[in-house]
Structure formats: C-alpha cells, structure tokens
Image: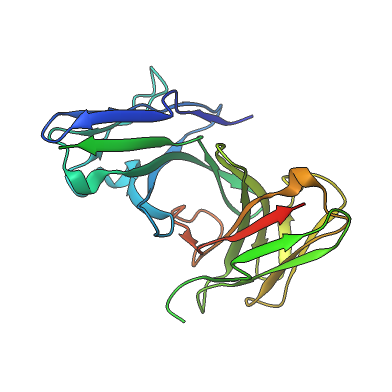
Length: 111
Length: 116
C-alpha cells in the first residue's frame, strides 16, 4: 500500500533562512508526487508537481527515487510562506487518480 | 460558481443522528473526491467518483458512510447514526481529469462536523 510520511509537524525558521520540508513515500509503482499548501483561512491548493520540474513562489522539489523522497526547498524563507504544507502521492485507481496525503507540516516563518 | 462549494460549512449534531454533507464541484469537472481530516491528522481518502459512478470507495470507514453523485454534478456524503469519532472536517475536491490525469485537485473549504 502507498504511504506518505512527513516527519515534522512544525517547522519554524527565520525570515531569509533556507527551508526544507521533508517528505518520504512508499509505493511499488512509478510515483507521481505533489506538494499542496493551505494558507490561513484559504482552501487547500496545489503548489507544485514533480513532473513539471517547476519552481513556484521560489519553492522547488526534486524526486529522489533512491531515497524515496520529495523534499520541498526554498533558499530564503519569506513571511508569506507561513502555511500548512502537505506532500501527496498520486496513484491510479479504478479509472482515476487517488491522492494519498501526508499528515502535513506547519511552516512558521519568524521575523 | 468559481470554485468547489460545500455545505454546510459547520454542522453540530448529536450522536446517533444522520447527517448529509453536500458538494458542488466546478462545472465540467468529471472527477470528484471526498476526504476526511481529523484534528491533527492528514487527509484521509474516502471515495472517488468519475461521473456518477464510484470506481473507488475503499476509504469509506464503515457501512454507516455512503455517497452518491448526480451525473457530473452535486455529490452528497451521508453519515448514518453518527459517532463521536466521525467528528472531522470533510473535504470535497474535483478535477477535470479522469484516468491518467495530472492529479491536480481543486478543493472546497470543507464541512466541519462535530458530533456531541
């Protein structure tokens, strides 16, 4: 069965410091991974997906199949990055995609 | 509407009562998902619809939970004989993609259920 692990419930960094939110997964098939973000009083939304190899709001994430990881990184944290971040693994199920989410990491950027 | 709409936003009920939660997906989205988020936990998959059929309902925790969808429109999640452990935020999401899609889901704001 698929599983997504985010070991940190809370990560607190100072503004301008580097950020790394950890995500590990277990899945026997070919993984598709995503990061979702929920800002205060907003709905959960997609931040980035590994297949796009994109940088969104300065965040990047590289899929490491050897370490089964998909850590989210940003070189310089900003106050507006404070939010809840969820790593998610997409698997094909009976005609569609099912996203399995981790438990989330609350990122707090302090001034 | 512009996004996924869920109602009610908050529901307080007594143990043993039935509740119905409603989700209006984004127009044209064929796929619809229900997730549950208990306090301090991650999102737990409940059921997935493609059109009005449910290819994957493996996440429904018991036979007290059921869901239906009308065509590619509204879905209702029904919980019968509610228990205190059913207290959670129930999130609905829709997607324009079906099989082999990109995995991007568009979420509603959720329905917070409290069972006393």
